[in-house]
Length: 295
Image 1: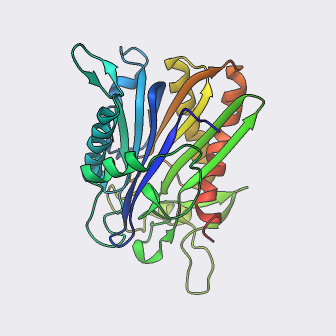
Image 2 (image 1 turned 180 degrees about the vertical axis):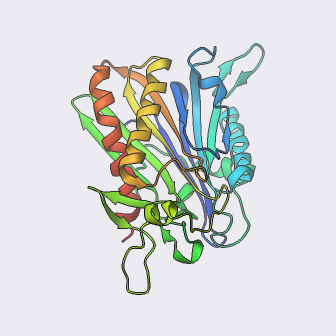
């Protein structure tokens, strides 16, 4: 499935951080939408519809907050080693975009460095859609409205879909301030002494909470073999945030740096309206899988 893409992970379980690289060596049309108020991102500006470059060779999702963006340089170095990139004259330049979530307080101060990015690139393989506590999800937690002592662990969120020749996958690191929701009910979140969900929405609305500044973020990437324009890839990235709103409460707070990318390998003609209907639900299911797959 989605054989044009390779997925690789770097996992530092001991220190509680990691990195996930989504690689398309031949290049894919890319888009992005950043809705969180506290993002840590790289090369998102070039994905705007009016910018010249439309081809992306990798999306890097990492832990380590802004420090973890260093991992993108390692993925770029790997891509250079396999001669992937945009022809820019004498040399090729790999286009690597990324976003990081804040996991610095999960275990100890650590972040995925350049070497971690190289390792993830070398480890990347096709059909690597296994969930679990790995890669970007190594140090990810949810429901931190009352602090890390009440947080719940999340794993790598993944949801795949196929219909005829169309193939889609959503991959995400789930690290929100809020609770994980399904059908309006909390399925994973902070609990009180009686084992009852406290409710991040209720706590936040009472203005009685321990704000961890920029210590939360849900980041992810939609990959598909559909033929998309750059504008359409950006629209799908926007719609991914509807899935966040369906599955996280509260979402897109001033303490979250939520960002979603889209990569399209341009192989299958598809009705774009169908994709706009599919994406929010697939993203919501990927986010919920981050807790149900490790329960």
